[in-house]
Image (cartoon, rainbow, N blue to C red; front, side, top):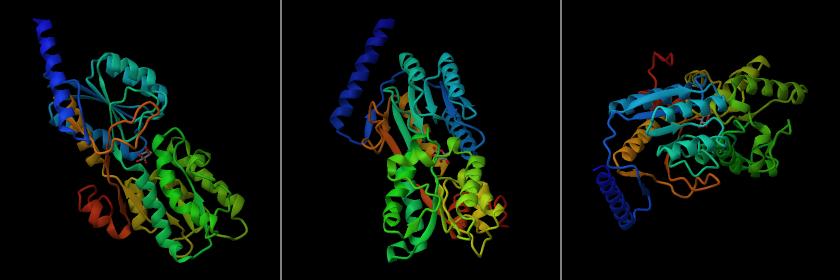
Length: 374
Ligand code: BGC
């Protein structure tokens, strides 16, 4: 009886595969774990840390969505420690999770634990950050990371009139955590816009912390995206390279946690809004940064509506567990060194002081009261 059931499952699965192959849809790939009633199945959600605002929002939204679909969830945060993340994932495997949703701390160290997951038939979705060097990552969902950097670079280009030949301006660039696969995409997107202006002399980097090309980004990376590290790095640059009276005109910050530290350093060094405060980029739309934008201390943030990402990933989980075709819209960009992972890319949005109300309040991401706007 059991064998017969297995045989039917196998025939069903191969029919699904055959049908999917016939449909010729390039934007989706078939799921293999079908034909079982997975109602109430456990979904393991592994997030990097509670210290960055976004991951709390991401985790909470995923739990809401998945519970609403009838699944059980185990949400864990790993305090930005790769070993802790590995043991949390191992526990999820031991507890018979059916799907793992993982925002990796270090995208290169999860291979062995994900092999254990694969051996147990568990599907893995890389959430926001790609997991590298393993065949055992089934899908990836993220915002277009290169585009995030492009938007930051283009914002600087427009604000400074670089296309019109203006300059020279003093730029201080920063990059994200060296172990985060996203950080290199953010940097490359921005640097591909900005580097030509450095080469032409319209942008100058007084600290010399100017990677020669996209691949050298880790030399200016801030480990674990820590605000305090970004602050002390900016203080060092200000003390060492700006003591003769020259001013920073623009800071490329890849995200809001770094921008916050950089803003604190500038404040400490006596920069004031309305007189010599530089252009500063960011990403995420964290509450403190949006307040800083309203106060003129941050010029923009690249907002990634984490609710959209959670919705997309919950849909992926459900499609996997109900044997449906999993929606993806990019099957070429994200190669993890072993395979190109079928991905779903969402579109990030630039938000400035002038559009906070339109995008962040209008979408219900924040209330006016939270932002001190009413
Ligand atoms: C995420 C960013 C976030 C950063 C720090 C990146 O992988 O894509 O949204 O700001 O990690 O947590």
